[in-house]
Amino acid sequence: MRVLSGIQPTGRFHWGNYFGAIKQYIDLQDNEQAFYFIADLHALTTIRNADRLRQNTLEAAIDLLALGLDPKQATLFRQSDVPEITDLTWILMTITQMSLLEKCHAYKDKKEKGIAADAGLFTYPVLMAADILLYDSDMVPVGQDQIQHVEVTRDLAQRFNNLFGETLTLPKSSVLDTSAKVPGIDGEKMSKSYRNVIEIFEDPKKQRKKIMSIKTDSATLEDPKDPDSCSVFALYKLFADETQQTELAARYRAGGMGYGEAKQAVHDAALEYFGPARERRTELSSDTDTLNDILAEGALKAREKGKEVLERVQSACGLGTARLSK
Image (cartoon, rainbow, N blue to C red; front, side, top):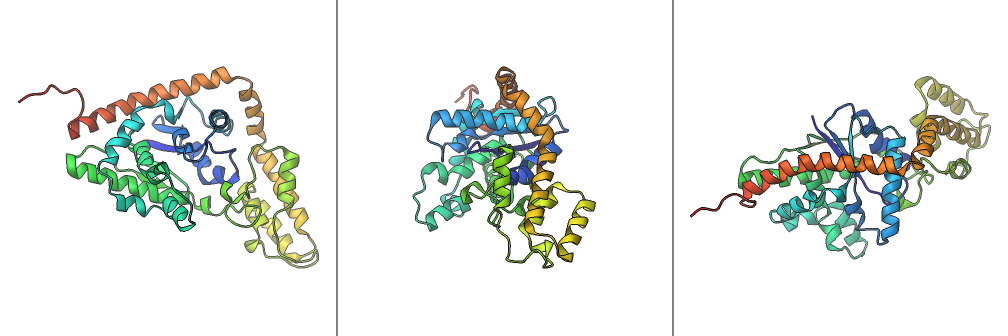
């Protein structure tokens, strides 16, 4: 089973990124067929500064490796290092119906808000489909908001196969139950666009300040509290085992504990959980040569598979270097 997923380098990774996607990457990497990429081509729809994009891509690679992605088990590469992706994107564009793209949520959301959407955003799902189909991917670990794009990928693969014969593999999405349950500091879903994130490798003092600012209800110190409706407790559950969760939930319901103490518990648990990753990140940051080697080797492996699939697609639809005859 080949696993494939990508993540945009639009900013530093936060808790929602980790529990919604990156943790899945790590859990599924015990498989030589796992392909993970940093989606710098996708990021061009939002980042217009070359230095920032390069730095974000570098930081994303360091973060993924620090969090446990092992290049000896999984293939890690930059999306733009595999030109076969854009070749396949064009071929898929020629069979993509406008009505399919008009239904995609990223485009619809901007249109409804009166924000101008460029062609890159409109055709984003086709590039994502090429990302997935280029490696004969079977499973695609994604966040809840990306399921639609995997369905678009399946639609395009089926349409191509119907037109030109069985050529492309139909993938399936894999979503963690927790991916929609990581609240930000305002109680809404944690997202960069909402500016409510807690970054994984943020300075501990700044991180604590954010955690202490999490919105809660007006219950007093003495009042019993409901852990099931509390964003602070929801975050604590991400890091704590069942025994720790049960103990804190009992203290919530008993009263006599303020939200400040619960927030401190979240901060302590997060520091312990990501502690080893912080140490690995410090080591990786000082060795960019090794990092670049890892990305280059990953791109070579990705291109090897990508060329195989692209040639199959080109042959199916009449492109390529086959000998012409009357």
